[in-house]
Structure formats: structure tokens, C-alpha cells
Length: 223
Image (cartoon, rainbow, N blue to C red; front, side):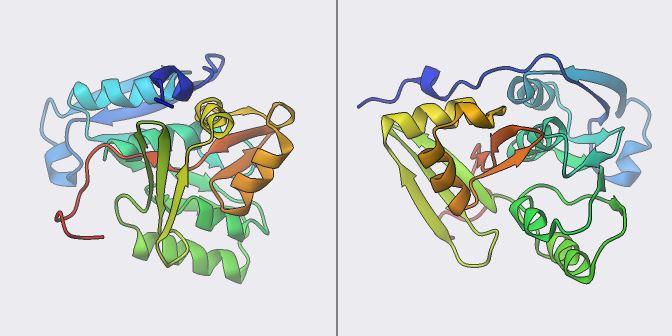
């Protein structure tokens, strides 16, 4: 089967707006130069297109104005996934509930938060430290081929490779990209993707964790 682009087009959720501050450079000294700061903007709904447009307009650093609740709202995390995909440096503050240590590992392919609000248990503290110290680009990515999606995942240490080529799984990935209601996802697919940490759930929505691979950031022979 030849995979059509429409099969990976997500269902848009335009009812969510996120305030961000923008710069043309991520270096702290450069950001103080007049003209580098691009002010504040509201991003709405289509996070993949929003991130692409920011990159194409020269934006290289984004700060999310409001703290991001790691346990409730998926929209800012999906936006962070898309910004990370374009290698746009992202500054943000996380709010973390007690007992969500596994989720911290699931999100460790995104730019790490600068600050974390909330009472953290020792395991959460350790995993946040690991996230900051061991972050690197393309830690969990996917690419789309003719009739398949390939995922490369190093969030949990060893390299894990997944090739997904079943039409119903590919269609599900398209809807999961911007989040879909849990009860609309086939239970078998939901369990299969959750077991290998390729999806997570917030506020009744499942969403796709790997980021789209735009450009390989290492030497060609680096695996």
C-alpha cells in the first residue's frame, strides 16, 4: 500500500490558544540585541503548522508564557513536540503532580523544562535531573515512508526500533498526532501503542509522543 499524506493528517483542535514569546536567536546575549525579540503571540489549534510557520519565519527560541500541567492539558506538550521537531529552543515551566515519574521519561525527548512547580518525590527529582542532563536531539522520532512509519526511540536507554505498516495503525497515528478521544481509539491499538510508550493520555485524550524527524542532526554514520 502506498501511504497517502492524508492518512497522517491529524484531527485539528482549534479551541485551544497558547501564549508564547518569540526570538530570532536562542543565545542569551544575542536575544538582547534590538530586533531579535519578536514579541508575544497567541498560537491556536494546528500546532504542527504553527511550529513550521515559526521556523520558516526565522524564529529559533520560544517561551511558553503559562506553566504547563504535565498531568492535565496535552495541547502545550503537543506544541512542544512540534517545536522540538523543528529544533526551536523551547523555554517552559512544568507543573508536576506527585507520582508521575513514568510520564517524565515519556516526555524526555522534548526540550526539558527550566523550572518545575509542585512537590516532587525522589524518583521524580532523579528523572527530571536525567531529563536535563541527558537530553539530546532526536531522542524519540518517527519518519514516514511509502506505506509505513518508522520510530526510533532512545528515551529509556537502549535504541528501540518500531516499524508500523498496518493501515488501521497508520490511520490511528494521524488522528493521534493532535490528540483524539480515548474512547474513539480501538482498544487493541491503544494497548499496543501504550505498551511501548508511543502514546500517552491527558484529560480523556490520547496523543502521539514521537516527534517528526525533519533533519538528522548527527554525522551520517551515527546510529
